[in-house]
Image 1: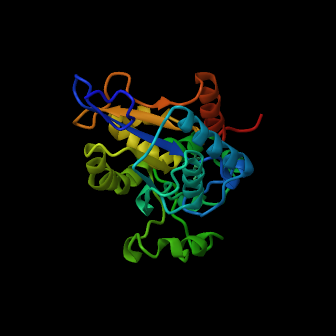
Image 2: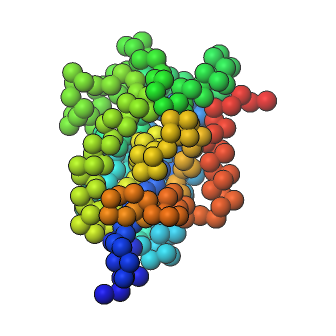
Length: 271
Ligand SMILES: O=C(O)[C@@H](CO)OP(=O)(O)O
């Protein structure tokens, strides 16, 4: 059977491969204001909404169809997903939402302006907080204006458990709660040949990318995922990327490069 037109599992002659599409949500209102956001449930900005629609159009033009979708419990990722599904005319597919795909919890940095934080602590420290593998931000405390906003938000009624509710997360800690979900819920569906779309966040997706590409703790520091540009992985039966199958962005390389630089620059001082 030839399945060259299918975007899920493919088997035409050679070894079986599987495609999975992921997207970081479109620009959020707090991305626009350059604030550390993490678990605060903010909306997409107008630009972010446009990015989500464009992502949907790109997927539609490339002929993508999905069997199911996964997202976090945060509306910026959910709304990105809905906009895409609307564009491709698949609003009725099954959607699974989990806090395990949330953005990393930014602890005591939540709500702070990234440029002001650079001015106070220096670019190097902010880069460590934003992109290092295992250095967490300071914990969020009750004095933080968003402490209750997060803790009392009904989106967290289903988890994480109250006695294990994060007060901060490094990338390492983010991966510890994201990867079990990837392995237990997403991988089995990919292996069944289901065509999967994941709409999540810069750092939860960095965790999945680090795992798939077996990137070192140093390599992952350099990766900034752009907002609202879908990317595809082509995986073998062991869920390892095939040659050239990693991080295949659906956008022209110059636009992707600029969008990545824009994210990186959020943690630079304004000259
Ligand atoms: O503030 C955040 O929650 C994240 C993503 O928007 O920011 P950063 O890119 O600094 O990890």
